[in-house]
Length: 45
Image (tube, rainbow, N blue to C red; front, side, top):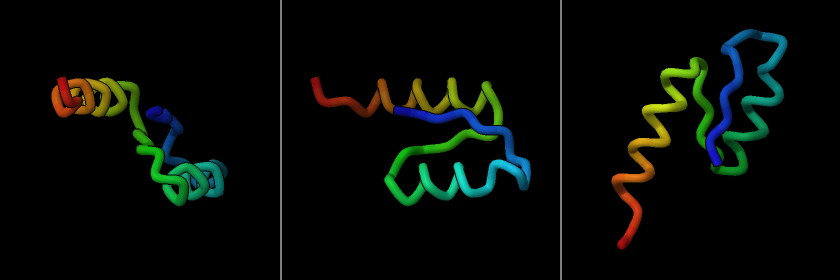
């Protein structure tokens, strides 16, 4: 799972909750896409 949450102070608690549970958080849609591509490349066959 990858989460996209705008990097704004009002979302700080949501971002911290995801990160504490080892869920990557991107502050832009483009960042989330790059994370997904990286995870796809690193998956075992």
